[in-house]
Every structure is written in C-alpha cells, then in structure tokens.
Length: 387
Image 1: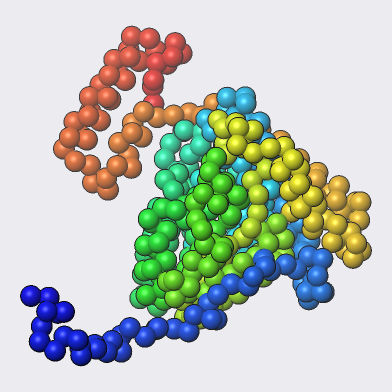
Image 2: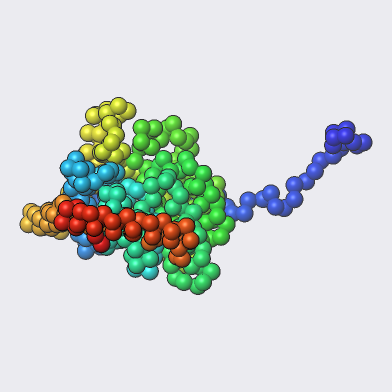
C-alpha cells in the first residue's frame, strides 16, 4: 500500500524538516559575471610595483622555459611535454602566493608553477624524461608529484589540508587543475569534502578552452566553472587568467581566507593554451589559426609588459635584462638535459615499500647476480652495468 492509498491520503501534506533549508546563503558564493581584471583598469594603481616587476620577470622566464622544454622533446631529450605557453600568469601567480610552509599540488601541465616555486628546472622535467619516479623530494619542496591522471591530486590536497588543520598547522594547499579535470569525479569529491570540512585549500582551475580536443561547451552547461562552487558551499571567483596581477590578487585573497579558517575557494582563471595539448597532439585538427591569433593579442607577457612600460616602471634595458636572464636559464637547462643520466637498475626496488617484501628482496638479489655476471663477461668499459 502506497502513501496515496492510505485513508486520508488526500489531506496528507508533509512539512519538510528543518534540514531541507540552505546551510548557507548562496548569493555571496556566486562569482562575478565577468572575469576580474587589474591590468588596464583603475585597480592597477593599487598594485605593488615591485610585485608587478617580479611577476614580469617570472613570466618572461616561464615563456622561455616552455619554449626550451618543447625544443627538448624534438631533440629526443624529453618523452613528452605539456606546454603552458599562454598560461604563464596562472602558473607564476600560483607559486608566488604560497608561503614556504604551504603545499602546491600541480597537474602534469604545471611544471612551470613548480619551477617558479623554486624547484630545480631539470628536476621538474625528470618525470617527463622518464628517468625515475618524481625527480624531486615532495616533502622537501612542499610540491606534490606532478600528477598525470586527471584531477587525482585534488582529493590529495584536501586530505593534506584537512590533516594540517586537525594538527593545528598553519598550512594551506593550492591545487591546480585544467578545465578537463573538472569533468572527473575526483574534482567533485574533492570540492565536497573540502567544503564540508572547511579545509584550508584553494582550487585553481585553468580554463584553457580545451580538454585535449574537447571544447568547454561540450564538457559543461554551467554559466562558468566558477559557478560550480556554490553547489558545494564555497565561494567561486572568476578571473582573467592572462592578467598576472589579477590572478595573484584573487589567489592571495583565497589563500588568506583559507588560512584564517574560512574554508576553500574555487578560482576559475580564464586563459588559453597557445600550444598543442602536448608535443604528440595536432591542435589544427580541432581549432583554427584565427582563434589562436585572437588570443595572442591578450598574451600575458605582453599585457604586463605594456602596463609596466606605460607606467614608466620598465624600460628597454629592463626588458632586455629579463630576457637575458631567461636565456641563461634556458642555456643551463639545455646543457644539463643534454647530459645522459647515470641510472642504477637497483633503484627499481628502492622506493616500492618502506620495508621490502620477501618477493622484492628475491627479485633484487636475482638482478644483482645478473648485473655482476654481465660485468664479469663484458666489463664496465664495454657497456657492463657496474654500479
């Protein structure tokens, strides 16, 4: 028997319990209708000139870093490289807003953010080179491993931030993801946990227009990706991702809010991927040259350079100095990446378990015997694997 079939069912008018009411007022959580901008607006007068100059130097270095890493793939020194050319403002701002004690959770495209945070440029490329593991110590640098599976770093960031809060540590986690990653289940799970726990974490979505070849319109019907925040009970911020000053300001506010116990924020930075998805992708199959050229007029490096020169904060000498510093970085990167790494086959067993299993010990012993036999037969000078 259903409720409708019960005697007096016509008069049954249940009153929802109080739990149905909204937990928070949605209005303050909604993003602005247009991306927030600083450069070219009255707000730029409040920007710190020293910060703008530092952002500019990092953008120039980042653009050169992307170009050099892309060249290394063509020379066979890198297996793959997902360029962030056009997205440097997001990458640099994400690195500079964090304190030393904070954590950065990058995706595979965010090598530049890791370098801007202070990671050795070669170590940032080690995973993409295929040498060994991550290439750097995540705990020492407070940078999680570059994440190739889409969006799986987001729940990790929430877990670390929540654990830090429980321990009383003054730590914020900043997690980076692309627009394609917002279509993954990990994205939604991370936002829900973060909001419920009020975890000190900031989610930075770099909306670069495409999930490989799939445009944003085929991924979501939401007004913006920042609007997704309100569904989880956190603020959504929409910012011009090519305006380095604006991205830095919005992220600074979000980090400060998280550190003060206000909970997470979802920031959508509207930017554009100028290069192909990776060196293995042919972007001409799904977008036209006209679209790319239109975005060149909104280049993050040129936007900031025009602002600084127009305000008299940067001259030709300053521009050349930034470019030469970037060239020195690229030359050093080139030289070090052209040196063949010295690999030890026994490293296969080093970082699997804290305490090796019996099976691993057996396999390691077998490999050690094979290497010794090879050395005895050929000798190290003939290509033997002496270690």
